[in-house]
Image (cartoon, rainbow, N blue to C red):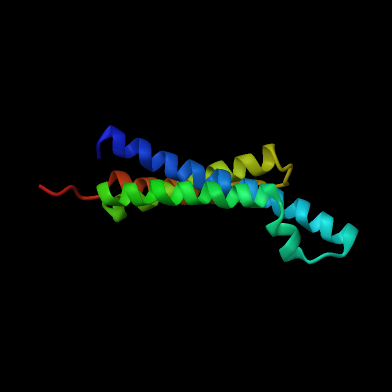
Length: 126
């Protein structure tokens, strides 16, 4: 995998993780708005700049992912999504103040480590 392909792949994964965090924040705010006003959650979400922004970030992530798939085998690219798991878990604790426990962290690192093992042990074509 070239350095440029790796960079696009990492951007795609990072943007997908950021989109998840932005959407979660937006939906939390939308839910609070619904509880205060009684309006529809769908309307509150659709009119939230955080939700719209999160969806836009997902769109950019999808374009980066498609570019990645045009350059890198799926069996090599897809396990990199495990980095997103670690990023989302860390950011949800730091920025969203969510609570976790040692089992959540252990499980996340086991999954990420296993997927990265798959990437590094993938047979190379000759």
